Length: 272
Image 1 (cartoon, one colour):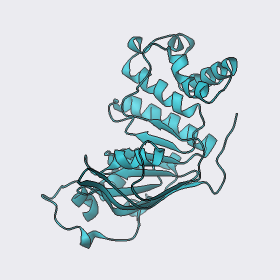
Image 2 (cartoon, one colour):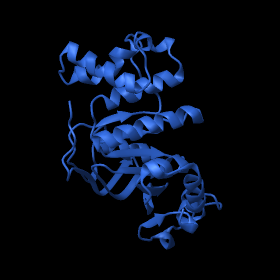
Image 3 (cartoon, helix red, strand yellow):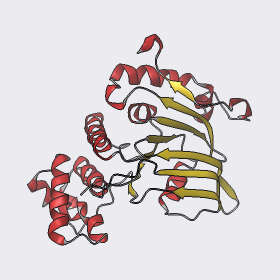
Image 4 (cartoon, helix red, strand yellow):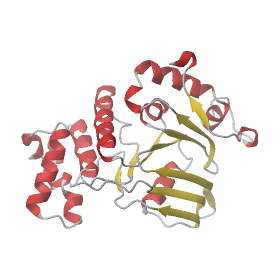
């Protein structure tokens, strides 16, 4: 089965604002995600990243502004795996296929094939969540989303609690999927290195209320971003005034008006 998104598919957010009671959590957000692109929302806790992701996923109702979604099959991966405890790994992977009406034999075949590419063996697929390690649960959760061939794929910090070795492994599996499906990906993270390693564009958000301070483009192809590139680019990223302001690295935040600037391209000095 292949459901590559149309070449011009995109998710576009215009003038989006959102509040909980009297507290404005998002203010005047504009962004665009095209097919085949990876966009990161980076910022501290409380800047509205998760709320924005939920709005884009259709899990919350838009209050002000608009979201135009030209994609067809959104899927989310959350920080916690959220597996159904009474179902095996295979049944958890196949859950979305069942919800979309794929026949039993076909969905088990698709789920097994995708799970194998994720490094899950037949014995693993017979396990229930309480029998799995945290890393295995994360693989199952990612496989559950990827088996749908999602467009877009929405990631709510699914790698944040994992050790560095497992992170690198899941990064590779995600890149394999991006290359084969050309799906758009919207991810939220507070890990700058993760954003530099995985994303084409990075939006830096600040809190109170959540708004976009600056946009960065990372030009090097994803497969060519070695550790040296990631470390150097992240170090430069951390010196940008908008990033320092957004994370409160230089003390209490005041007005950010002076930080408004067009998109910047991220690449280390010396042509690396």
